Length: 215
Image (cartoon, rainbow, N blue to C red; front, side):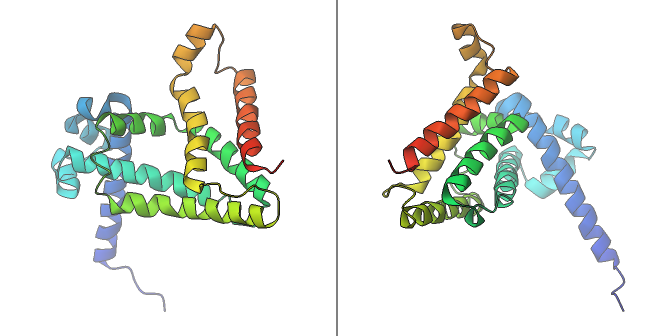
């Protein structure tokens, strides 16, 4: 017979829901106002919990900010795993990752603003985070496998550093989207129009694939 849920199970589920509600509220607060401008009282109000509960689970604002960053990385890395890059032909896998990165940044602008805030504080919250490294290392390993398979098949040139390649993929999206207001102003073009976004993604794929493919 199935085990009857115990009161301890119910309390554990309630704790998980409370922590996730706090993380979601904190993500919104930090992404809108940055670490310096975010207030624990406002996060508690957004989450619908007592402020003391936040301190119980996360101790202080810096620890909560780190938890938000780690949860943010978890979300994007889990979404990337659904691409099943190692099951795709190498060139298709690299294109898929490039397209995914662009679309994820578009759909999750809070990801960019949280990274901006973390960098403003010189990533001091992430420096000691083993979880952040554990979350991000598998992507580089997967991309390395794709690149090696492409090289072995004669599709990709050799000597490509998967970390450098991923940074380039991310940067091509990050800079454009993070600076679209200034870029649109100085070039006199709406860089967030549907046509402009489509052209940007096409350009990014051409640049990345042009780098990895053999002549």
